[in-house]
Length: 109
Length: 114
Image 1 (tube, helix red, strand yellow):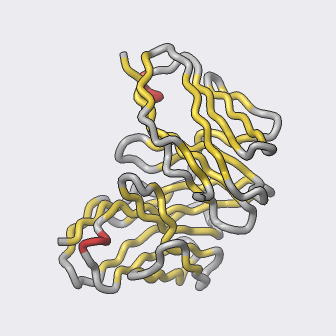
Image 2 (image 1 turned 180 degrees about the horizontal axis):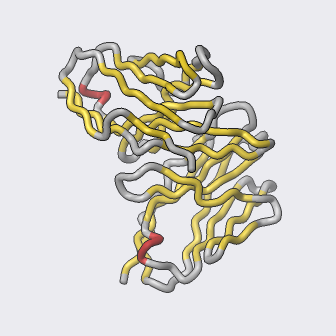
């Protein structure tokens, strides 16, 4: 089983829609969780960290469920500029970050 | 603003050539990484370094080596390039604050080996 698994998509949604991605991780020793965003032909960039209590940044909400070992990202009121690949990332502390393969989102006008 | 720069955006080499990919970061980060990214396979870690002159193998080190002589510079070397090393190569540096680690990536080098 892969350490971090994501549905590759693509998720094709109309502007204004709400879309959610899930990501599962297999190592219960995982300590920190993040979502990165990667635009087409660009490098990945940190979108947001994921905290146990859940956290929100504008239209983006991230949640962590340790018992079921998954994290989620919710995007409300989708914009065309949200079209990108979203990478789920897990940290186990003193080892390199583990990146999922990404979920591709395409927001359509 | 953190900046990670890579020596080339695009590179074309021939099979058997020795290839150097250079990466420089300007934020005094201890940690540096080299990844390759291929369609359907995601980011795969080649090598990483947590300190000057230190290097650790990642998930796919075969056919690659690295050099970290100075803190700000981490070089990836393909000793004898092969066509299956055609890929996008991404360098990253990071800082760790408690439980939080943020990686900053360079713009990438698209390498084509003919």
